[in-house]
Image (cartoon, rainbow, N blue to C red; front, side):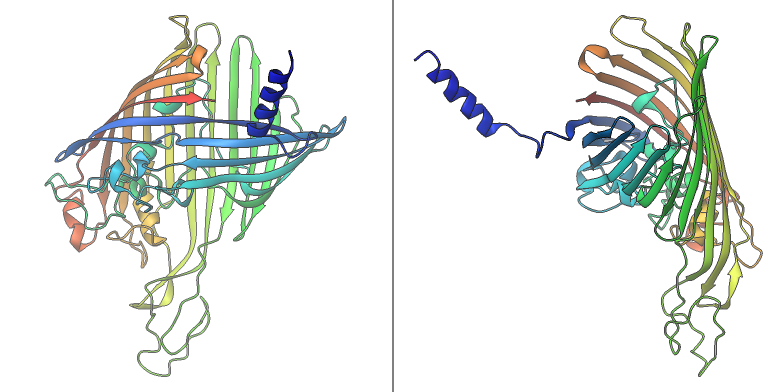
Length: 455
């Protein structure tokens, strides 16, 4: 009689408990929830939006591992992100509750709004002396390489600054918006994609750590590959971390579809059967285009005082040609390389006994974003830089912020002010007022407060 009730309760608990498929593979569920409130002013309009992300959107993950032998471990990672209203996808026309299931100009395929997005689905095997091999959809060698930060600025800052305003349409000092939603701050700041490498289907190898150094190399679909060297160490009261990497991406190749010569490939000799045979049906064809990135970041922290400096930089080159309906022979890209650099510094100390308080200032500079985005077809209304044309675009950004960690709740609160400026030439007729010689582009300011709680 004494145990009947207990046995009934145990049976009920077993019937309602989530259990693993087997006892050989460990399983952990983790992640975090993050939400922001962003106030913005583009010189003409101002508003307050509530959303996920900037620096990170809410996500959850399943991780597992099993010991194969004393030297060999196998495991997996599944991770999803909920980005129902990412602040980098909002703009003057759409706030967080207007985004639906679209992907606004500031978002990428990995940051689709209105749905739960699979970020990572990978399996790996690691040998203590031989290194690790990983396969699946997820981070390649250069992912997160520009985000190294020992100062723990958290949700208040990242070197990928357009995560805080990328979807906003460029607006002239005369109050007029650019005529295309793809003429936004993300295109101007980082070109066609983020400096933080997008996740892909790939195979990756990572060496064991040697004196704090590791090397990674990956190959992925669409003729993509990258390599990275990373370091982490501590000596003389200083912590150091950094990395540098190189990636090659040639996914932009596309056939030029002709009216009377369907399927003609880039560079194939054209035989005109009529005057219209050389006309291209659907916009532009990019011929043998390759995009390469050289990028990295580094951070140093003085442990005793909490003083830190974090920096990042990158250079993106385009090689290849573009065919348009008006130009029947491929024209080479003549615009500039895309270059950026970022620096932040401050102090990270546990002033109040509840967790670290991080105070910081930041500055960044980016040149050539609009030129490359227009050439690759991800920005319209701006010169594509062929036939020897060279235009200019330069974004500068500065900001101040604070992050407060609450260790007892695995939580952080943050607040950050950021100001973005753009000076550019090359806007086409519908957008000529955005050129520096006309009204120019108005600065945009954002003030974001938010929180993140881990589980």
